[in-house]
Image 1 (tube, rainbow, N blue to C red):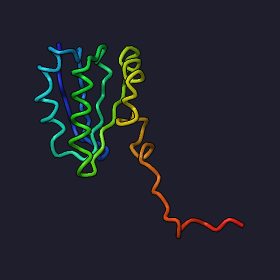
Image 2: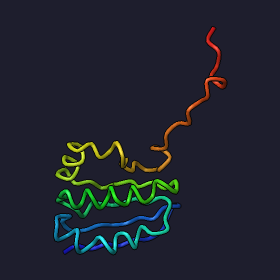
Image 3: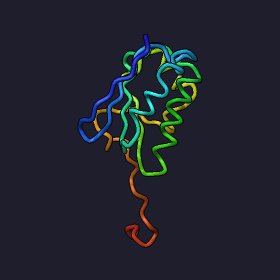
Length: 122
């Protein structure tokens, strides 16, 4: 059974997915998933209840990521089952969507220093 639940805590929207994110699962959860993500700046997707993800499930996450980025938002995943982690590693999704590891600050890029601001080498 596929389900989507969400709540706001710790300054982020937490979305919990359950079931298989195959073609049928995607069709059942996509509208509710995007409803849950709407209006949030930081979205953390708990996938501990997802044992299988197909290209449609990946598409769901990438589409949410693409909707958040233009307004400075960020999508994270957490609770990955071994099979899902293997898929994510294979397709290198973590280059776009980082894994949540306790704080979203762990994944924020360091600001780039201007050449004028760089310390002088002696």
